[in-house]
Image (cartoon, rainbow, N blue to C red; front, top):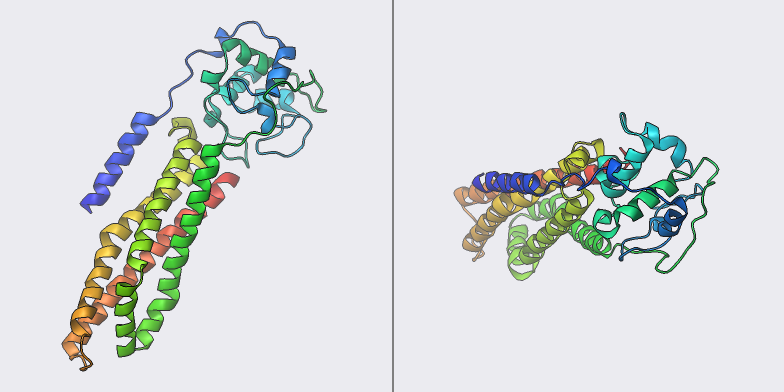
Length: 319
């Protein structure tokens, strides 16, 4: 319990310390703009920043980000109290402030460092020329354009997905299939359980996978939340995904603080009481049953937390 409280305090402090600040300058500070230059910037990488055209189409074609085909007509009505230009400004430099329904917060958050104020003004001017028919200044491709890969997200997402699949699959197999089989086999099942936990790499593989899943998941959450940006955290996708992260952390802490010790206690009892073929006394059998029931109960609690985490993480994108 103390470990859980400590983890919660650390997470709260991390969120408070890392919440993104507002932009270093405002929309009104931008210089006069050149939409034609903005069209060129839209299709190219500037200072190794991801090109806008990598994720956003201007003709209605689906992409990783929402299409900008009717952007000029829609931008002014997206956020109450913000003009089309102000909304575009924050969409570019602080994308977590507002997410279009159906899209996750995967847009890079470093454009303020990569783009000059002039570049920012020109890009805003260009996208505000895009009407319902995709008309506007044509985006001309120049050096550095083309499809760009977010290596950070790709690597951590692959690690997180594969590790989580193993963690959930192994835990589910234990709770739904192995434990009932061990119990049904009686004394033979007790001996097999002892061999399973002592001779296999289960006790190493499962904690290692849980750690890998948790670390990769937190790395993804840090990026997707725009470094724990308060605006994003308060949005519906942010709240749902945050609940999923908390459930995942609880599953991780519960596994290390409760399931690990209860499993070790059960295996130690098995080693002590099943070294010979002599039948167990009623007291010994009762001790084993209680230890087994305790381990099974906490295994189910862990699975519920993991399922809740997965449900939130899967559904957050569509809320």
